[in-house]
Length: 131
Image (tube, rainbow, N blue to C red):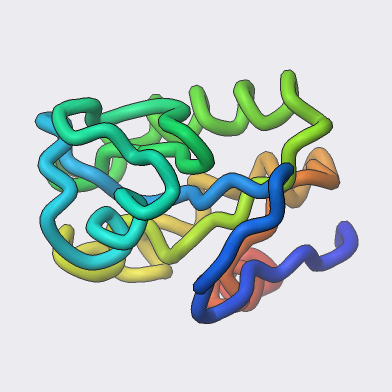
């Protein structure tokens, strides 16, 4: 198993090279949960996906896990292309969106399998991926 890179349970500040990865809705209405916090670090109201300031939005407030997967895949490709940045992933989709870590964690398996050195996952995701 690759080295565990664990996101802090509570992210309250970011270093210059750190990016807060949060679950959003497709409309980019960042009104609650981690999405509301992301506004402090440059999340753009009305932008539901991708890099925004020191944040990266992954839409989770719609559909199924299978429909969320392409957005996680896009994020992982972006992270791989930007090794100078450190991505702190929250438990995306596991709050207001109603998914569980068991639903979402497997989408991040490539980050562990490929030992993505700049992607930090919630501890709950690592526990699931190690089963």
